[in-house]
Length: 167
Image (cartoon, rainbow, N blue to C red; front, top):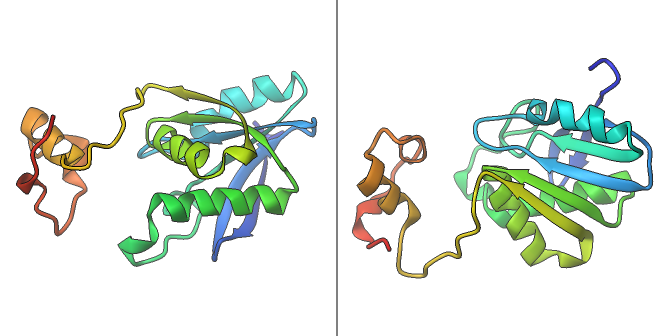
């Protein structure tokens, strides 16, 4: 683990903590889930860097040693994908293999939708792709099925998610 380098990269108006290893021409960007950090990917970083990949695992906006802007409005997918595009620009990387888990998988799908020109391939784990339904609330559905103590429901503040139907 002492081979993994830790840096702070300014991007999109924040400072992002990044763990990385490897110098190969092929880069892999790993996106962690909730409530995780770069550390989720420590084994993959070491293993894949030994095969010649440049492996990068940031703490996403609001996590770990990456800045946490106060307004909740600054945590949209556009902001987070913008952070990652700025990270790649700062590291001089044009295109990456993208790997996401849990919350990171959702961000990875948005990254592919917003910036397909920056992605060579996508691998997501643990979360199936579910297109957003324009009249349904994911949180209301989770609350209806699993109750208020479900981890996604616990962290909602100031919203009435029970007003939408869910399929």
